[in-house]
Image (cartoon, rainbow, N blue to C red; front, top):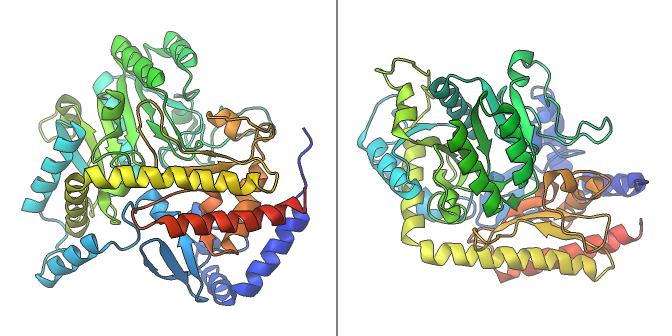
Length: 466
């Protein structure tokens, strides 16, 4: 299929953006003198430069040029209560005023209390805290390999599990060379490791069964998201996760649910419970941290105890200097307690807002004769969802839900949502990074209405170039 040429539209948008954001542009030029691409996280770079944020509160951020931007990115989906929620900032400020929060390197009561809440809400027998989702998934894989004595790792195409050797294969879709998700996404990785990563298809039980038939006796673990993030924002089908649980048990493989995004996003605990699936290990981060850098590996005691001092086969899961950082755990304890206490109100509210958000985007584009389809919906297991990913299928009425469909340029117009839509929305003071994001409790009817109005303007602008 011939791809549309958006070069003129992109050039027009970039020129307008540069003119309206001179201070962010100047700071980005300064940043490039010392930072690679002017940023410290590749995803946060947007062409020609990202907005430089000066403050943030609730549903909004304000950039250096004074633009008040309605933000649906919300800290990589971590800020379920919005930016700098008072329930966390007030408690954290109070703790620091009493000389508690930066005494790195000591066990304390807080670790115990946070672990108790975490294990109760996730069904974990044991937990160990660390500082990032990438570290959590890496340690979970190491534990699985040590526990089983096997080396191979099974994951799904489009699944992002962090920047470590077992995670950097099968992340991005490659259409040009026909490899799809069967390729390594980074230079500098040991071939001996990446060759041991097997990539299967998300939400395809038959493909999963075939992988276990071929590789079951070599697999240490199967790591999968119950709600896939960068692979298109779609919930796992219950039958897919049920097949995963049955196959891993039959073949002696550790099932890891990567809940860095899903954990505490759909309920005050693990999303696996919504599928009635208890994994062997699960990884958590984002929402549970209350805006602070907290991650965790939870699950079976007999596996996690391989990180203990008395383990015969020891896994070096120390987590780093800032693991269980007191300020971070203080925020995590505060956030988890708040979510537990207000579970009946928060989750129905943001699920309703999420549905309104997706409907608003689709209706805005439909009104201008452009078919847009938003993933991020719940399903039979997840009752409602606060997530969104905007796609532009080539075929009107299509509802793709697998990474292979969502990111194949022959199926969906990936340039339109990743380059055009994002920048055009930013010019309307809406931040939906590369067309995906989430609502928080700080987003109300006014914010959904503002998104719909902005999408109508963007749709009119795009329509002229189709």
